[in-house]
Amino acid sequence: MSIEFDQSVIETVRRAGTRALDWLIPSDDCRFELTDIVLSAHPSPTSESQEWMLSVRVATNNRALVLGQFADLSPDGFRGFHDNYVIGFVHSAVLAEHGLELGRLVQLQLDVHESPSARPSDAYRYLPLSEALARGALTDASPLARRMRRYELAHLLVAGYAVSGPSPGMIDAIEEFCRDHAGVTVIDAFSGTGSLARVALVAGAARVSCVDQSVGHEAHGTLADFPGRSEFLSADAFDASFEWPEADLIVADPFYDHTYLVTRNLLPRWRGSVSTVIVNLGPSSAMAWQERNTCAIREAGFSVETRDAFGEAIAWCTVR
Image (cartoon, rainbow, N blue to C red):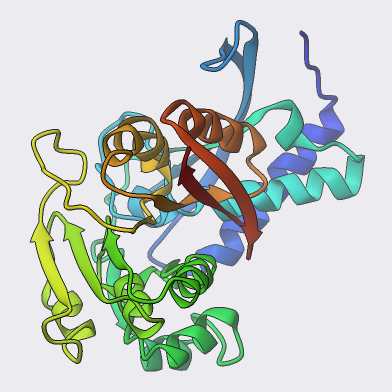
């Protein structure tokens, strides 16, 4: 299989990638330049064919901010949250201008590396909803703001001026499951502030377990009005020695680049102790990425239904 893009498509990718970063990171602290666009072939993890990858390469003085998540700032390729939006923006622009569905042809990747400039600190932080609204990080009528008010969620995770969580699609999925299955037990596998755990309790779960490497005071505060119905387990979810408690539902909203580690490594371990898992697979437009993860889910012994919610693919995984 051979793929060739003419120069007009490459220019559209370059223009759309730059516009997306301009929109996401309106910060004087963060400087970036789209340096290259590379098309390359790799062996497919799911078949004997080749898989094509289009890398949009960015040089920046603040790699963590461009990625939009806490990141190991090593020279290795490390993709993150803003990949969802930058690549989605590129996909939409190429489809509108050239009629090409890039997600069906290639796997898209945002490849971020550092320039020699020193990178600013404090790229990530928890921000109170009231402050996020005042700063214009999101609007009062946005789907996320409405859901945060409904469930009295206090904090967002932000990178610069961009919101990284919680996911409104995951909130809706957990609400639906818990309202349809009252009294269930739930594990929030990457709990952070405990927002998704709180959604589960408000929606009718009997008990939740929050699992994270560092369960902070934010999570304890989020669940303070549910005494006796929550527990906090400080653990690395990917640690093979960690013994997962049994539950009716596990919810997993990991950083985007960790998604395949969840579907490939954790779902086989969860199969014996849970009936349903809901996982945020990342951007709906990354079709090759979705296929890779859904194949891993099926290989782990689950049936899977993927739903598009606010541009993200939410996978409902049920033990077969």
